[in-house]
Length: 295
Image (tube, rainbow, N blue to C red; front, side, top):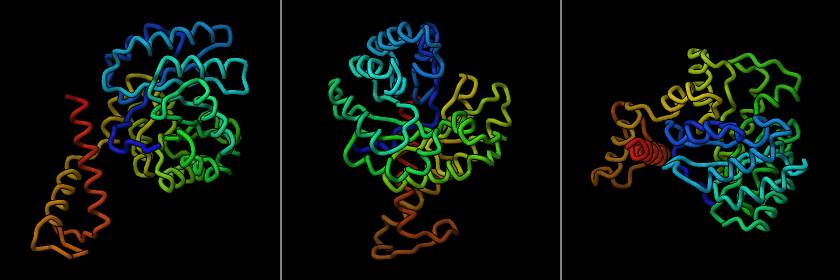
């Protein structure tokens, strides 16, 4: 399945599936994607009601250009398979599955989606939050060629628990290997890479710093746990105005007939190769997509 690389995923906001008011509020928020959560955000005795609430919300629509994703419970739980069936029937843009550990998990999820009647363009996003997933990250990524797999989402809270590591935002010492390997696999296999959550609601400086770290590492966007975090993610993960201007200048320079056949140019004082032209086109396309969404 081909990923729409130019669709903004700067901000991916988790919404608790049991909270119908929150799901309705999502229609008014400046999130690029909303993740309706049936897993961690829902207590066991509320799982069935949350499933119904989420699926009704997805079916009713009204989320505009926002990407709608449903995070199900794992297939090894008593709720997982029925979550998947109901979510597929509701018709979100993608299903998000937790705690995958190898490529076989991706095959099983994809097969279950097919059996439930999922169209080919319904994406499969997966949480990378288990140590075995990090060790098997290439095996997981290689499933992209045979399944609906489209995105990796970092589950840093679960990863901290499993690693017995200490989360020290925004440095995130314990996660550097896991984050780096996941981004590398995503880029090698043309997958989206979405960074994990920042737990400090109200800590604006810490959030901005962690968003910046994720952006520097190559993530496409960040998962969020509160609407107050949207502005920071939307700002940091959007191309800066200066970068867009430079990208347009690069495109114009290589399009100039006087530069035909040249592989290296100097653009605004910067050495620029053909590899920069590809990135320039992507930068402008992402900026245009963000502008269209916000309009």
